Image 1 (tube, helix red, strand yellow):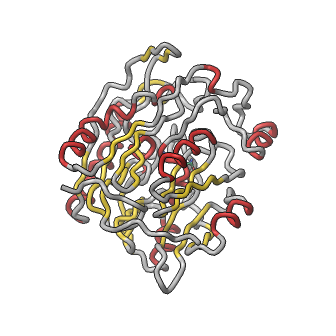
Image 2 (cartoon, protein in one colour; image 1 turned 90 degrees about the vertical axis):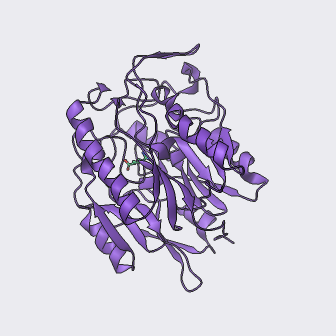
Image 3 (cartoon, protein in one colour; image 1 turned 90 degrees about the horizontal axis):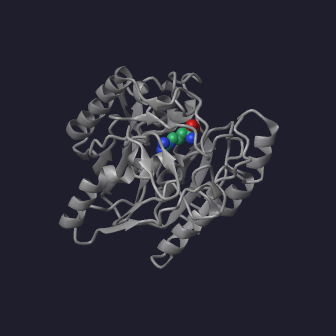
Length: 366
Ligand code: ARG
């Protein structure tokens, strides 16, 4: 039975993994991370509120979109971890399968991750991955090399104040909190456009990690491109920075959007997208620049949406400018309440990982 097959972000969706908010913790300070809100276990109230919205999304996917939905194991991530290289008091949570699992065609890669609190996160998906492995004889299951996450993997002098000039300078120079000691990347740094994978170098993916991926998929004809959005002073995960909204057809180019206040560099854009089937437009501004208290993402979660087919998207219901933009382009929007889930690492795209879409791997680049 064919289960794992997903080459892009828009082909008709058939199966998806949807995260869980249970046992979620805001990570404590670690070499690569300075918390901006209270650390430790998320309140039961917030977990309950998010669970209602995430469970509602599950129903929409199942009954309105006819999609098979799998949920991860509820592991107690409030527990401490001690490895030969570090110890932490508590972990993070399995709300965002997008961050951990990278689906490329028939392969699922458990990414290396980059923060200590997320070291064992992919274990929450092992029941699902084992099941896919048993049922789908073509499925490839890979775990990217686990980094040590010891002190020397991080730049201890990286400035944590997001407003200071020094930090801007680091990011302008493509230097972030992780250094090049060991390969690392979070899966959510990868945007899948068929044969071309666009990867953000960032706080959670270094050049060695991007190169690991490049070498890993090269023999199958994939190309891996590194991109940057230097106006983003906390570059973490590409899926609120470069998002496909309309797939290309024979008649017209596809549309990718990026936030106008932190656009892709001209150099990256020209080098990668010239002559391709894509144009990059400004994303519509979020409905509100205010995010829920203790949400660690930006308001650009407004574009963190899930395409369930080439002309249908699931979008957070209050993100009206995004909805209007999509509908003006002929994309139907299914509106779901999701703001209470924003404080669990992101929105609808982050909290899902599509496993099967009907379609093959195409080339949209010269
Ligand atoms: N860096 C993004 C922002 O704050 C959030 C992206 C979250 N994505 C994810 N897959 N967890 O704009």
